[in-house]
Image 1 (tube, one colour):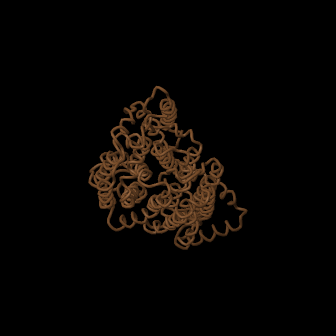
Image 2 (tube, helix red, strand yellow):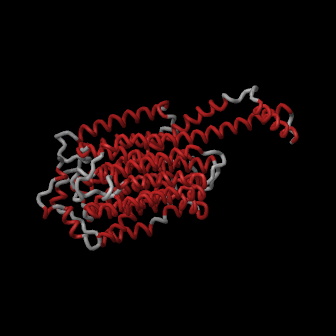
Image 3 (cartoon, helix red, strand yellow):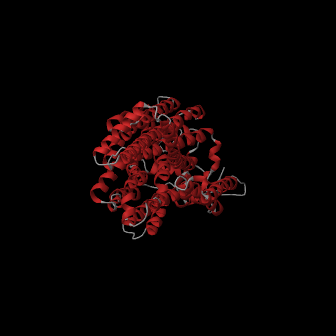
Length: 538
């Protein structure tokens, strides 16, 4: 066990100190923590709709402007595993306050930066600060709420995490359509100030000078390996598709660097010579936590992957406006909220494995149903599938967290919370990369398959070409030119159908991932009693 988990007696236990000190204002603190978490989860999804306008304003290409999102995720993924050490070393309250301030200031500065380079620097700072807004908030909730209240607390916290990404595209689309992209970086300021006021004035940190000393010295080797391994991995996931994956030498080199960095990190963090590891990997010795991290990883694939693929499909292929595409995603948030409300009351009465099984099955059914889009698909056609996806995710999140921490002590909660958060974030990155690549490959497959039906023996094809050519001739085109234009029109129709089928295959792949997670459910721990603390939902 690392030095971070040592406590001398109950009087010096930060968990018990915080539990007693905050019992009168804990529900108000919960509001402030939920608000701070919403800031983080909304960031990328609300900003994506503004990237094209930002590219034009900053006179850069669409490929270059993607670094606005990539920079944030790079810093966020690298810092997430460190949050447990940082919060113990400097105190959770201090760390959380500084993170909220840095997040707010760096985001606001993005709106006034005159160049892409300065925007990227601000986004790196913002991503690093954002890592604490969920993981450290979750650790605070473990400290200030008793075990018997963790169910409803987790559900309330989880509502912000799953509803915000669903509402963000609608809000972002409306702002961009009516006011441009700069206000996107200002709307969070009142929310951030409210969260900062609540946390700074009400929350009493349970850490002591002795508990801070237990964090030990900074593991500089671990920090370096973490930055190299996870930073390289995140870059590969973000840029791999754009650079044609392993056909690009840079992606190959960074992939090898990521593998080497992560392997070296694991060896060093588990080494007896490392007295104060920056990441407590020993918590993975708990099979329940390991299984929960994998399920959280799959949920990241589903939540972020489905949001990404659906938004691109309806905007770029089906012609939805930014506002309309945001409206189309609302059922997902509504379903998630309903699932969290139901589970909040049932989490202490029903075996969490059963709730997780039902939730994964609902999400699988919803994503499979999304795999039948056509050129005429409208909001009414995606209402039920997206609602089921959200309902399944909302029904699973709290039980997964309860199961994950059933065998962990409160002193290990911050480490476990950081690992679950990292699993969800990496799942999102892997999900977007995986689905995007799969869609491209399946689009080629479906196009080849559709072209196989098109030959001169197909009477429907020949009559369609003749009809189109005749129409072009009537508009003054020569016979040969009209026939060439008719064939071009057919090719465009085939390409459109192939793209839609490619996206449909992507959604069905996510359904298979959800079903595969059912194999991990028996490995999850079931709480033996209500006396175990469980951190907030991821």
